[in-house]
Image 1 (cartoon, rainbow, N blue to C red):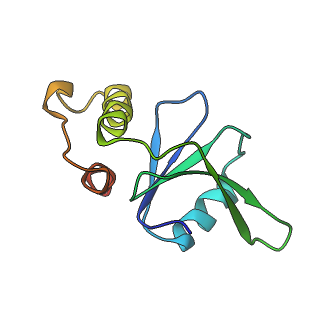
Image 2 (image 1 turned 135 degrees about the horizontal axis):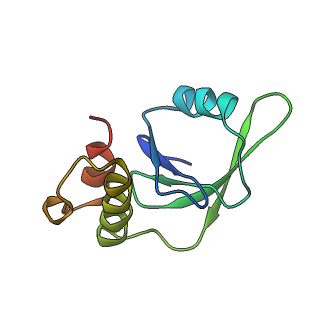
Length: 105
């Protein structure tokens, strides 16, 4: 079960998409062309592949071990660097939840 909020990591792109709920996920999937290697990182650090069927229902497949706060910090640093908005050395998080919530701003 996915714990919201979460982020969507797009394959081949440093951009991260913050998702506060399943409704946000549904909205994003309406406008995206998804790749098989896109994945979600939920607020516990667990990663999931997302599949949407013809009736707009989602299934989530756990992949790998949960990501660490350090790994997520690195993903967020790359995301912020691509946006050229923040000094990267100041981006540090103590937990996965704190890291994900930073993208809500």
